[in-house]
Image 1 (cartoon, protein in one colour):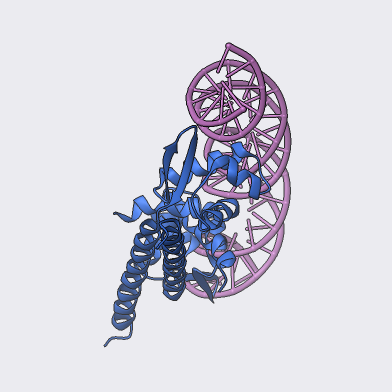
Image 2 (tube, rainbow over the protein chains, first blue to last red; image 1 turned 180 degrees about the vertical axis):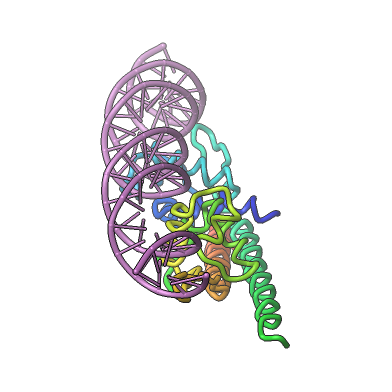
Length: 105
Length: 105
DNA sequence: CCGCAGTGCAACCATAGGGTTGCAATCAAA
DNA sequence: TTTGATTGCAACCCTATGGTTGCACTGCGG
C-alpha cells in the first residue's frame, strides 16, 4: 500500500460521526437502520458514512435477508497504523541525517 | 491522548496538499514562501495548511529573522500511529469476544 | 534610508461534503 | 397477498474548506 492510498483512509477517519459509527460497530455488527436508532443522525446520513468507510476498506458488508449488516475490518486499522508509523520513522531518519550534515559531523 | 483528540489529526492527514507539504518538509525545514516555490499552490494556501498542521501538532515553527521556518514533528506521527493501532486491537478483542459468545463457546 | 523579501490579514469564490426529507423498490412475515 | 420494515436513490440545503487575489506590515541588506 502506497502512502497516497492512505489519504482517503485518513479523510474517512477525520470525521466524528464516522468514529461514532465505528464505535457502535465495535459492539457488534449492525445495519444502517439499527445504527440510526443509536446515533443522533438520520439513517441516510449513516448510509453515506458507511459507504465511504466501505470504500476505504474500514468496513465490510454482508446481506442478510432484507437487511445489510456492516462489520469493522480491524486489519485495515492495523495496516494503516503500521504505514503511518513507517512514514514517521522515515521522516525522523531523513531529518536526523540532514541535521548531522548541517552540524558538519 | 484520547481518541477524540485524534480526529483533527486524521482530518489534517486527509488532504493531499498537506501530504505534499509534509513530504517537502521531509527534505528539511522550510518557510511558507520556500514551499510555495516547490509546490503548485500559492503561498497563502500553504500558510493555511501549515496553520492546520501546526494546530494538530504535526509541525512546529521557529522564527528566524524575517522568516518563519517549519519543521515536522515526527513524534506526533508515531503517537498517532500507536493510538490507532491500540484502537484497532481493542476492536478486534471486543469483536472476538462477541463472536465467541455468539458461537456459544 | 530605501527597497525588496517574507509574512499576516481579509475578502472573496467555488466545490465538497455532511445533513435532511421524500419516495420508490424490495422482501420477510402475517 | 397485503403489510410493515429496510434499503436505495435523488433532490436539496448549508456550512466548511481549499484555493485565489490584493494589500498592509515588518525587517534585512545595500
